[in-house]
Length: 360
Image (cartoon, rainbow, N blue to C red; front, side, top):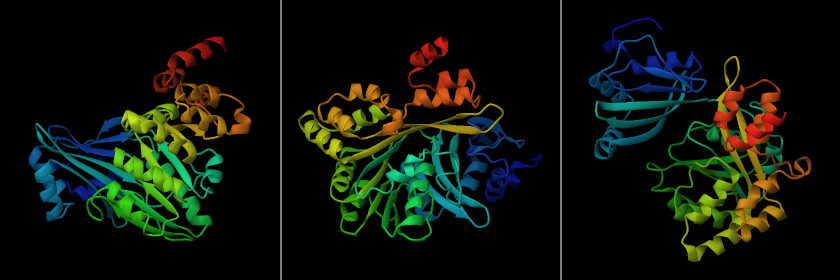
């Protein structure tokens, strides 16, 4: 990108040009030139350093007065928007000691099919279930939203269902193909995830997506919905299948946990724990640890033996369709897709991985 006076930078043109770099994110921070994230690494653009006033002008050019008031009251703002003939974006505005800063996440307008990113073939079978809970977990920026959007897209392509999504903000916008979508944004369309979930059960849904299961009330409502004839998709910021189950149970008081374990054991379909890492030669690749709740897993959850789940996931994988992150990393290493250093850094169990590599 060529040098130009920063005052002449138009935020819409900047976002459009950033897409040409196939980056995932754009960051505007006072005292720095605009920076983009490509293959998990931040790279500065060849543009002048921005000051607080310039960023404020660009930020406010994208929002309405109502959003501006929310930001000025709370110093935080999450929203999504679409630029015609450009693309869709998720934005977060926040204040730093230097002034307003902005983070923009690029969202593809075309929802990728499950096959595009080599998702596990079992996903197509999981989404055929009539009721239960499917969780896609991982850190921020691990592609959870894309995986979930692809799973909902698979349903949309194949069956007639009413799909309600509750998101903060709405990211992928679905077009009705066979299914009917009701997409709701927390803050503008509903007051909270928990409130939207409560009323969703009166809106005749077949499928419910909960953008983030962040509190006890939301998790409780999601479990109830999953038990009562709906398939519920949700996300948590956890990095493994076992830690996801522990996180859900630990949200509740000690006296409630036995009941929650029973609910989770009966309703859980799968936990997909996802992470992204750089490929050798450029680009990124996902690993997906997959837990599928068979009778053995259900029993371990019910009896508070979550620590044994990992060992269970390692057994008879050709029959259970389960896979651990270590299995995934070893496969990528054998195919020379990622480096040994990347695998060890990304691993949730680096000692286990290094031991296997040492014996190979």
